[in-house]
Amino acid sequence: MNILVTGGAGYIGSHTVLALMERGHHVVVLDNFSNSSPKVMPRLEALAGNPIPLCQVDLRDGDTVFDVLVSHKIDAVIHFAALKAVGESCEQPLQYFDNNVSGTISLLLAMQKANVLRFVFSSSAMVYGDTEHETLSENTPRSANNPYGRTKLMIEEIIQDHCAADTNFKAAILRYFNPVGAHPSGMIGEDPRGTPNNLMPYLCQVASGKREKLSVFGNDYPTPDGTGLRDYLHVMDLARAHADALDYLQSQSKNLTVNLGTGSASSVLDMIHAFEQANKLKIPHEIIGRRPGDVTRLCADPGLAKELLSWESRHDLLQMCADAWRWQSKNPEGYNS
Ligand code: NAD
Ligand code: UDP
Image 1: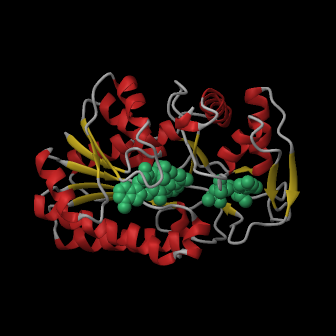
Image 2: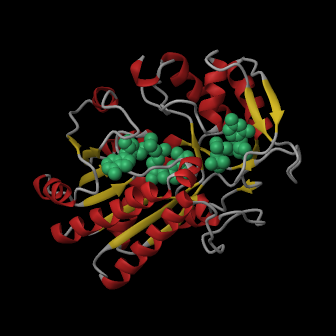
Image 3: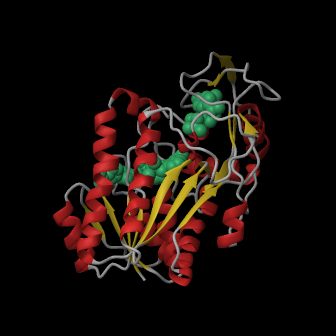
């Protein structure tokens, strides 16, 4: 298939481009580089052994998106492009609704006009909000507690309404838990701008000496060691799930909503210990207060992804930590190294 990957220069998108090409698909990347670097492209081409067409376009420019869909004879779209920082979304909610929600509507309208009928969407565990559930299945009630999460909830509903109105259009909604790690080559990985918000990139920058110590946000949660629990999964496993979801849309011609996680929860202290063990390093850290807006626990029930897609996570925490560190140590300044 000819596949357009929006946000294909970003962290998860870039890994997915390779997973799709490994399955024989032709991939076109669309990105406005608002949170990524064009320097990822030659590295992707070297890893794939083939050129990858790149369109520097903003999603909200619907006419140009339509031209891209038609000129590249696109059969399916995998839609990663979004803003994703929770804190920033509280400060700039309108920018988030404009970029994420309006951007998706613009893309869906262009797809409708170009008669492109297969769609895979990056949703998030954030749509479950602050929940008491031990593990989250796809029918756990949803309620986001920040503007970023609400953009994902709204987009899910827009997609569902569109699928109901056009039964030829088939969509997969993938709810990711916490992707970490990097391609085993160490050539592509997560390259956050400025101070990292997320645990793994921060851990990596402490390990490299770029940051003095890791702040652990709270040890008074109702969890075994008091720190927050998350379901971390390897980005290579997550990338593969997109190719599986696309196969499902093609073979079953049915819509799909699935969680993508490992089904096991790790605390912040578990992650520090795994990183130290995998990479034979010490991570200086101190416990500070809770981060506003944080939830205690988010852990997937990944049973449906296994049942419908035969998808399961294949990497453990030690591999996630080793691969994250290989990328960081080979590229201390990310794509500017
Ligand atoms: P990322 O920021 O690395 O990648 C997103 C890409 O989209 C960037 O390259 C950015 O330049 C591009 N982009 C943003 N707005 C655009 C626009 N209007 N037009 C064109 N390009 C645009 O983020 P990521 O971590 O790879 O996340 C990919 C997707 O997965 C996002 O939708 C995110 O919300 C979702 N997600 C991520 C996580 C995570 O922890 N990384 C968890 C759950 C869901
Ligand atoms: N966390 C932390 N220190 C950091 C970054 C994150 O203690 O510098 C904790 C955070 O409180 C949460 C877990 O690590 O319990 C995962 O946070 P991340 O931001 O990576 O993911 P999210 O909260 O979005 O699921």
